[in-house]
Image 1 (tube, one colour):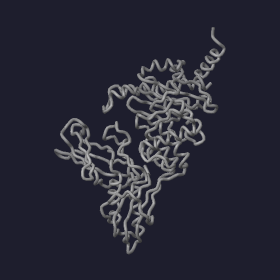
Image 2 (tube, helix red, strand yellow):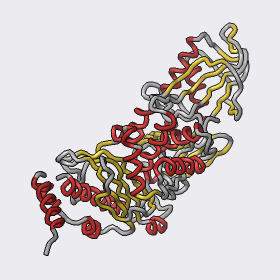
Image 3 (cartoon, helix red, strand yellow):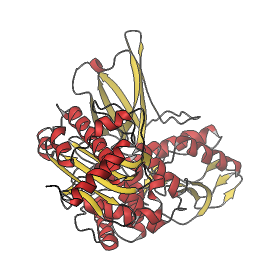
Image 4 (cartoon, helix red, strand yellow):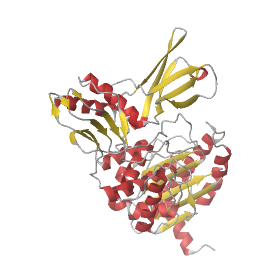
Length: 478
């Protein structure tokens, strides 16, 4: 005999399913979440929570308290951390500072390019600063040309388990340019290759003299890297180049890179500068030029859309510095986890970065949902998230979607996550987190550039995510 509750639940699910388009209705008919997970064929662990956004009532869960890697879904927590402690109108600033007066167009002292931790500073921004410097009547400097990057602690790379050439895993410092990446381009030229390393922007394209590349006759490895004499030197396997192409490579000495590029841009404006030197302590002086970033809210929206790791780390480190906590990336991650515990009672949070690129970060789906609801709603987090498109049973993006989902995705090798908000067809608003990971498989394939089975595993996870969202829309959106 069926209980009244089961009959009512079945009726509501059927009503919601009937309101969906035929194609979606046929896919959804409506399997329990446990059956969807079994049918996904995923190895490893699955943890999820879905709750009513208004009341906080948990509607379904599995492994709600199991701490799992959030991958880039961690950027949602980082956004909340920054919004509460820096404010939505916070802006990063990069400055040109003179330690002496300008006499006859010459700075009677040193000129300092001082970074403020701006993760979005680009070559065109530096070109604008060089133009403003010239407009101030500066034609040279009697002293030194210095760079200062002490606004943030230097970190050689975000994660140590990524390919050396991964542009999404650069160094961190208080002075950063072009997301700490240099543009490498190669073209066939006779029997050889024409190579270039530059710091291209939309309008300016200066050469980068702090990075060099050479082609080596080999099949593997694809790239090698070394840092000798202040020059970042790359070698590239000739067998992998084809007839031409380009890619962004990570920069490990960001202050030298930015200082070099600004020197070139200033010279183009009639302001020759000596060779840049890096300093660790910031002297006093007069600010001649300031370049401000976008306000924090649009900056975070772009970070969520493009999942920019460097932006997340800069924002998180700057927030920790404001709170007087965290003089390293690991310490700053810990400070963010402590903040989350204080604000929401989260007990599972263990963060070692702010982007989620490190696979040793942990949080449970239940704690993620609590943060998205308790902190995310008043801070308008959903408006910063990217619309999520459902996938069908083959993994392709569905052409029609009868309900809205705004969420942050996360992907590492054998880790796939999704956390955010959804509005069911009847207007019911839900908040959710779905974490999947196979850490044993990840450990076995660590160091592999393209681990066998990784692509199929992530595809299965993303299909499961969509199936769970469809189920919840049908069952709880009635």
